[in-house]
Image 1 (spheres, rainbow, N blue to C red):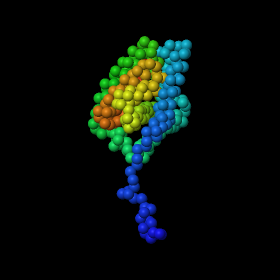
Image 2: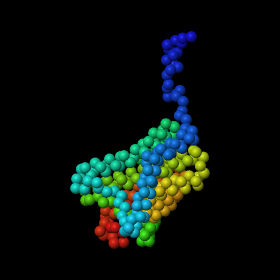
Image 3: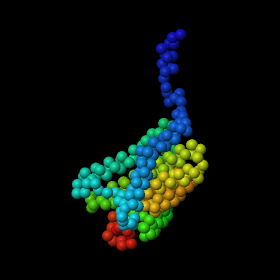
Image 4: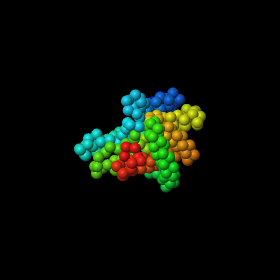
Amino acid sequence: MRLPQAKRATIGAVTAETKPPALLPDRRTLTHEIWLVFALSLGASALAALISFTGSLTAEKELAEQTASLVTDRYAGRPWLGLSWQLYGIAAALVPVALVAHLMARSAEPMGRTLGVTWVPRGLDLLRGAGVAAAIGGSGLALYLVANAVGANLTIVPTTLGDVWWRVPVLVLSAIENAVLEEVLVLGYLLHRLDQLGWSRWKADLTSAAVRGSYHLYQGLGGFVGNFVMGLIFAFLYRRWGRVMPLLVAHALIDIVAFVGWVALAGKASWLPGA
């Protein structure tokens, strides 16, 4: 029997009220999703870090005599081209974050509600983040100095950017980019997905911390250990507070102080390796 035109239109229409909610993918799909997200982002960085560390270990120089530069100038002496390259690199590094936001939105899990990731941090996020940064930043610097002194770490040079007008703004943006990429993916997204797969909390937290340490291995064993411990602390605080933003703020502040502080101390601090 042929339905009236009005009835057919009603059946064919999909409104906000009648649209079925998105369903969470099955375990296999979730597992594939995690592997693909990290293969396109920090998982690839971890493999690159392992190769880099292997090269450092097999080099003729001791680890402490080698350097690892973080923010470098590919076009020294050509400031506008150099600025364009830096901004491109920052934007490209954040694409996996956009991918995660898209994937979670498709499964009806907006990052703001699910992970506590918002465009603007709350006042309490800033307060907690500053406290965590103060506690971890100082101990992290001490660990780096010890690791470098005993030959377990490369000498870290936060930036080799010349004295260009955009140096400090780019360093601040790079610090924020690092914080957004790492905390959204390794802290919020990965722990959330592993929880959905039924992993125990301790196993998920250890995995998240190990991933964090692995892509810092290019810095040496000190970089791995320090970031592994930081990952465990961040996982504990994330589960306690239920929000990524305080830890994202903390990470950004730690990196901003490291980058901008290096610029201020270069040539003036004999106690800081490579300065």
